[in-house]
Image 1 (tube, rainbow, N blue to C red):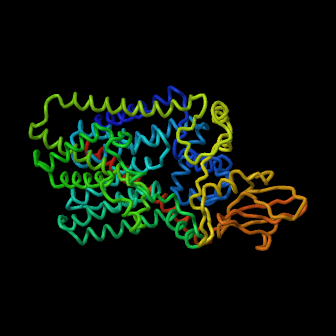
Image 2 (cartoon, one colour; image 1 turned 45 degrees about the vertical axis):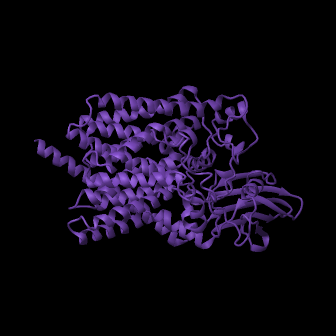
Image 3 (spheres, helix red, strand yellow; image 1 turned 180 degrees about the vertical axis):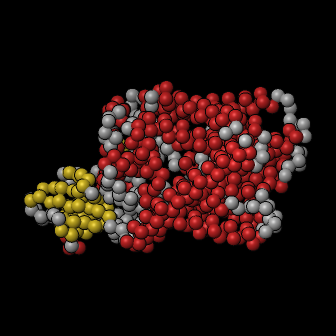
Length: 570
């Protein structure tokens, strides 16, 4: 590896640590908007790893051991990666610290890759990469555990594939590159994948007029799509199967995005003033033709500018969501911001590189960049400090308490989070998010959060739950009434009562899929398991094999490149 690249990597690592230092110094856990939801996801995979009891579909440890399906629909492999990280550190605090550093560091290195592949000068590459690390799309994981950051950290990789379509007229698509990057997106954050595909489409249409061999372009695209479908079969096939056989509750629907989900001019929480000024300067330089810009530089700037405008409250988003329901899947238009920022920062790097070649950049540019980085870092550290300081409060220590229920707070909750048993705090504070629960068709549920809370999390009618293969629920009964066992039933969920398969007349499900079991007098033991089809099992096995093959191909190619370099040197 070149010395410059090593220095850049060390800079990104140092910045990552510096960004999270305020939380590290205060030894605080930040309970943000999505912390509790994702903590349950990763607790489930951590416990599966710890006990060697892998349940790909249902949650057997997290989410009150409810048997609900989340991870299979929400970045399954990444959920296991985070679970493994939690398993290694065995602490919610250290998990937050290490994952925060990891997200910021990867964001910096991927942005550096994007800039260097687009021939941005080294100094400017480090500069825009450092700025990208400190954008809201990345820091939101540190300050609130919003999973948007995991998608945002790899956006530059997707843009590197997209820009190649125009940058490299001879070889616009490298099949392995496009396949791996797109698959990585699907495995990480499906919503970010949809945005990326739209950007691919824009660049692809333009590439039709610039590439040397259109036939080769379509051939490479076709092969990439086929291989990507195979590599991501563990995501889309379970999704199709679950939605086909169940009526699942959709995630939160935002009917008023203009009131909740935009980047506001007066609010620097999403877009800092420094970045806004830099973006305005870059857009102005391109539109007014003050500097000489390549076609690609102009394109990424214009596209980034248009996406940025879409995140501001300038479009009739309420009406768009109302009349075009399929667009409302994005929930918050502000989620487009990381794509705009990555594109505009790339455009800025390309403009600065071009201007330097023309001797039109002031000699103090390094000082200016240093001041901008320090100012941005100071702003991020202040945000992290403010978020972490809440943990030290005498009363409420939950930063974002919307829809959060708790029976412990303050010092008591702090002690629970210090417990060696990672599940202890999650039994005392939770966010009853009902995403993907199997609701009954055509039934209107007035308050799904409250119903899920009462039927699953707050359900006290069952004496004990444990995990033995599946979820084992035990209770003693002196009557034959129906009891809420605190478990959700999907089409492929199987219930066994006292060692025998339960008959349909022995239970029924509520509007949100909670199982109500008819007790027998005395001891009752219900075992809950999930039995996916043989096709599903075969597909998941094939998916793992396909990733192993791709890994070996990457290793083989890396060895080939290394041998070639050694031969050239000798």
